[in-house]
Image 1: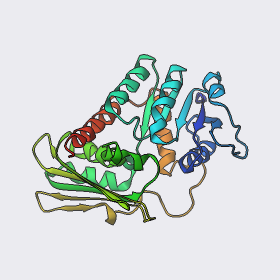
Image 2: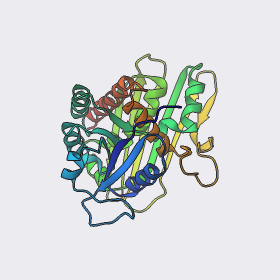
Image 3: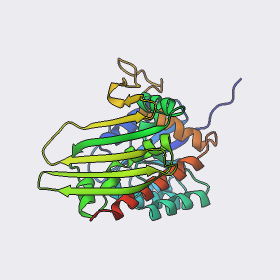
Image 4: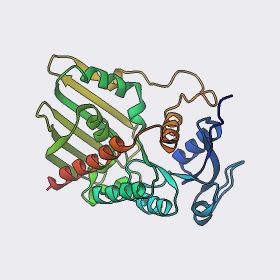
Length: 300
């Protein structure tokens, strides 16, 4: 008879849209993660899920890990508290708002023998896998990643602080994952009362192509759109808007692991069990924030 897989007790911190998705998937998953409760600054209830204080979550002996779904400028504090309390951490990107802090948090996790896992479900999409497949045998000419969205609290603060590229760090990470290391060569920022626009140009360290990352954040409500468009030296073109979603049509069946966030939970659980290495993920996470900081240094 197969050995029973041990469960890791998990608590979700932050109950916005992302937090509720995590709770839903934890209730359905079969990857060895067991939902023990949630932490929220708001007076809310989640049916069937205990609400815990942060102190209770970090001292409970049956809780091994936390999933942080708060505003990004709060990540550092929650991650540090959790790691210092001996809890593994899954956090939405970015881990923190500077490369120095990000590196420090990963070092803290490693020193304590804990997992710090940064979520970027874009790596799991069919679009990303299709681009990696094309790029494996072709030389890049140009690649552009663009994101259009709304102001949403922490993002609105970033341009004022001179850090707009942190709001598109997911795009930088996916391009880095496909094409390798790069260096910032040009950056621009335009701020008006209604929209923030920024653009950065990056050359691959291999000098084999140019990458552009663009962003727009609107005060008035607009549809959120993200697109990656790539031209290769052999004339082939990749357009992410032409690639269908990775998720199959119809409702997701409980425990099937077909949703992207569910698959991210499975990766986190595999890291907790020591079945998946973390070094490459850590290097990518830190380096991409460094690249964003290089672009920020070019803004005038």
